[in-house]
Length: 144
Image (cartoon, rainbow, N blue to C red; front, side, top):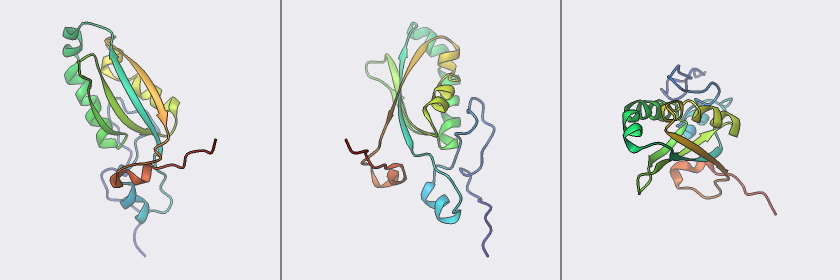
């Protein structure tokens, strides 16, 4: 009988600075779910929109810490894409989470937020259509 212990680096919860408890799960959902029938996945999708609230010089002073924070969430499988807006007045993050409150708590740990240089807008959405690589995030739209 195969082992149920996963060796995927994305499957284990890791102590990463700024990662809110309960949302760091496997990003390789197809691999993980095929091997581990009890695994749960992050299926709620979110668009996180950052809007700078301070001069760009203050934003730049926190950029390295913000990027390290992003890297931790990419490694944990919580973030799927991120980048700054053009013109440069904020950024966008595509994320997966267990629920809105967990994502709000996660956003509050961003060094840009703790440093007082940005505000977040968070939009939950139903990913009814995706690229094949994101198929595990697809949800049926409610009738109505």
